[in-house]
Length: 179
Image (cartoon, rainbow, N blue to C red; front, side):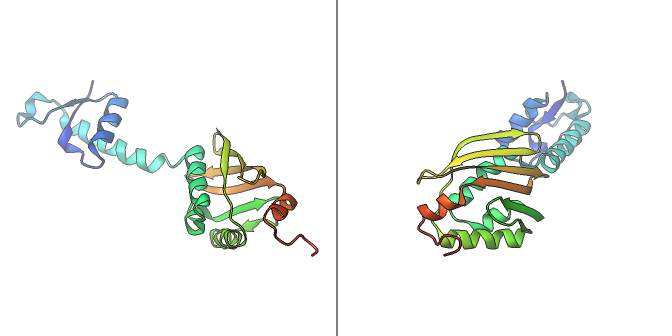
């Protein structure tokens, strides 16, 4: 089993360090000034440092975690926070409306929607399949819907939502199309 000096990798909080070391099979030993007691320690420290860097770089947020964060931001009416979860050229297509393209346009869409109505998302189910996340939701007024999120490199590249726009407009006492 590889050995690691606890003080050699100050890149992350200690508890997280212990979990990562244990998960990848490192034995953690107290620091000793007699380095001959720990053969090849530099190699192990270098390897673990690279592993932590690679782990942070190549393990972006997964769909369920991203959708959970999206829900929190949505329920706080944080349009800028939500927009930060999207790629620059992302597409948000709520099928009752025309597709919205680009992070800035998505932020503007959410800003307008949050001004028009007080909205809440109560998750009923969140599923993940590879790069895709699926959210089944309801709101306090009884409206239900679902959303599909394509997550690439920890950001939303495409979102499609299905919900009843007419019911939404009536529940929030907003003007109906054609009025």
